[in-house]
Length: 259
Image 1 (cartoon, rainbow, N blue to C red):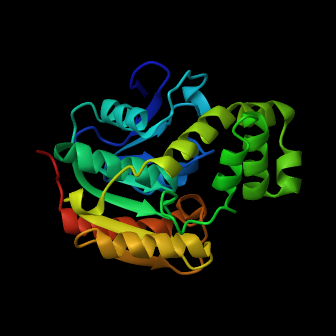
Image 2 (image 1 turned 60 degrees about the vertical axis):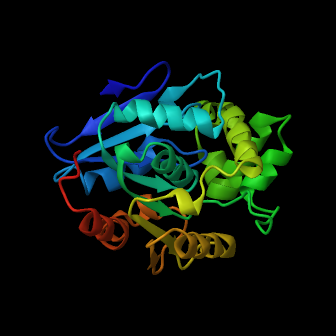
Image 3 (image 1 turned 180 degrees about the horizontal axis):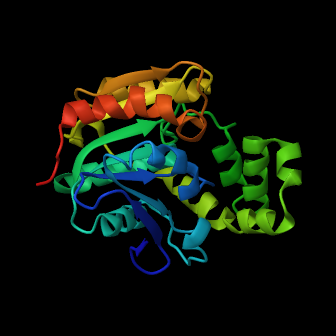
């Protein structure tokens, strides 16, 4: 286990001599959501999972929760090491922002159903948009987000202690998504590392549209469509996620990818 600085929890698995892969989770998730994917990688790679600020074991955290802070956290996790970065949902924006600002630390990026919520066409009816509208009530925003993600029955079946901890993550949720809506975190013409972009066939239309746009505008990006997969594919379809999304990136980058 490593700690990347105040209140940021991280865990590493696999041989320290192997090339580094960092997994970055999305909004209202935590590193545990990337565990199945990590286990399909850590026999060949050194894999880092971390709880982004305000989530999981990186709580409590006083913020800020904007992209500049997210980038600083990931750079701290990297600790000067060069890595392939895999970002799920919001985590894909963190990965691309680091690739733009610190390309010497990034060998390649894979993103999956990453929200482009700053785009004017991005719908105002998503779970994230609803969370932003509840900015003055972050605990309610977190619960509403989780109910849309899990369904009412699964949410209500969670222990009250678990539900309370998830509600407490609402501050991070609201602040990071509001910042993302107002500030573009990366520009396609400034990404110069190999990128693989993916979405699932059962995912939302706006994610399919967003990932298609990202693949078209980032130079030489590859677009991958995961058949039968939804937004939670890194967890629910980890083997397909690795085989169809991450392995092509490894093939493009080549290993090892140390400086």
